[in-house]
Structure formats: structure tokens, C-alpha cells
Length: 175
Image (cartoon, rainbow, N blue to C red; front, side, top):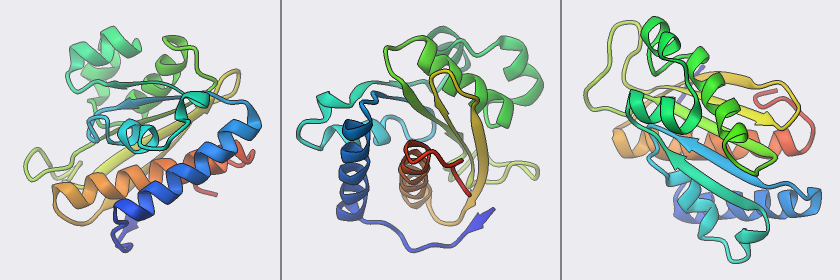
């Protein structure tokens, strides 16, 4: 899915995070984030909200293959066969985040924010986002964001938060 949506500014991201926090608090859910290309930006956005300790458990920024394996339980074979930016990897990341935390809902992101690192198969702007509730099945979606490094990362944070809101509401993210 290619997205050319308007860039959310910091205030728009904060509003999304506040709304998500209210939903998580009301549903008695704790959030964990597993982030590669966003480097902790999702966790930063939600922890900017006062009272987030009611609904935020922890965040893991795992860039390297080794960190993805050690912190999130991503299998070496998955990384070798499919690469870090893949459906298979993000599904293992989001599941591993729940296994390695006390949270009840998770989001994971992995992608190529650029300006380098893209290939013909996985150009800059390719991002996989995965979501999962404890005891449920993970879902993942690919995005193809346009823009520079900051714009791609900002759009990723927004899409991750939007998907979490959908998941809390009992919907599959992206529907």
C-alpha cells in the first residue's frame, strides 16, 4: 500500500497517542513496542503522555539482527531467509515483544527509512508493521511511504498508533 498522506506533526501524533492511551486504560491493556526503523519513536510518543504508566509496559528498539534475536526472539533463519524488512520478521518481532514483556498488546515495526538501504524489491519507504493482542493471532501490513527519512519514520509512527487503536476496538488493523 503506497501512502502519500499528509505528514502528521508532533501535535497530531500526541493526539493519537492520547486517544490510544484512553482506549488502553479503559480496556485495562498494557502496551509494548518493538521498533527497528523508528528507533523508539513510538515509545517516545506514548511516554510523552502523562499517566502512560497506567497502560505502557516497555519499548524495545532492536536495529541489528543480533538485537532482534536476543530481545525479541526472532529466529536467525527468518532473518537469513526473509531479511529484517519482511512480514515474517515483523510477525516474530510482535510475538516476541509480548513473550518478553508483561504487556497485553503489542506493535512492531521494521522498515527502510533511507536515504540508503533500499533495493529494487524493498525500496526506501518499505515498512512492515505488526500488531498483536496476547492470546490472539498477529497481523501485519506492508506500507510504502513517500518522503525523506524523518517523513517515513513519522508516517510509520502514525500508522502504528492508528493500527493499535483499531486492535483495541476489536478490529484488524488496516480494515
